[in-house]
Structure formats: structure tokens, C-alpha cells
Length: 145
Image (cartoon, rainbow, N blue to C red; front, side, top):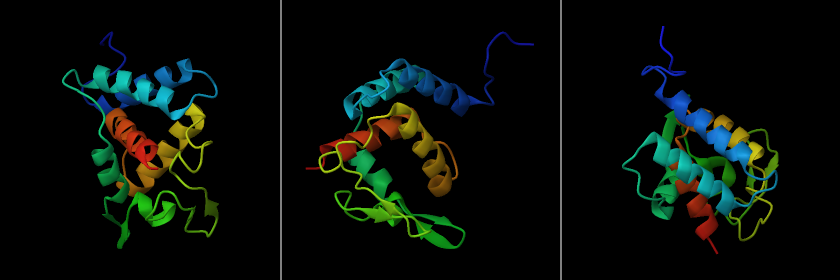
């Protein structure tokens, strides 16, 4: 029996738990910058060679197309090709704009942010997103004017 809470077979779980702890330690109503700082700490803990987040990598993640159930999907499939515009779920429910410049309430609740990353990363990528991907994604959406 190991004293470590995670084994080498669960590398994503360690990063996910670190991310959640860091985010929960932030204020209940944190802005994108505070959440990005939390993801930065989690990314550094998960990968000591981590340098910084990239809006370009976040943009690539937003528009990355993957085949899911015979359909090409991306974040933009539901959230719109222009993150400044509203999107729509497959059930035709409205989704507010993703860009923080036009939707200042976006990414102000760390628990909601984590909830939607968990759901949407699984829906589109069939896996959890890494802290680096989350930070890149928020960096991209925060850079849009």
C-alpha cells in the first residue's frame, strides 16, 4: 500500500484535484484573472517545465474539431464561431457569449467554471482538460475585445 493519494495510473486525477483545491481557495466570486492564477499554480504543480499560458493555444483548443459520434465537434459548435456572440446547446438552449469583454459575468464563479470544464471537456474531448488547457482557454477568451 502506498502513502501517496494518487498512483501513476491516475495522473489526471492529481492535477484535477489540485485545480479544484486551488480554485476553491479563491474567493467565491473570483474573476478570470484569479482563476487563471489558480490554473497557473496547478499547471506548475503538474508540470515543472510549465512556462505560461498562451491565448493562441487557447484559441486552438476553442476551434479544435474532433470526431464524436460521427459528428465533428468543437467548443465553437455550441459556443459560436465568434466567442463575442451567443451560442446554443444541441437542445436549442441559449448560451451567453464566452468572451469576458462582452460577458463580464463569465468566469466569475470558480465552481461553475470547473463544472462546465468538466462537462464540456468530456463532451467534446472525451477526457478532462488539463490545468494548462483551462488556463490557455481562459487566457484566449479574456484576450478578445
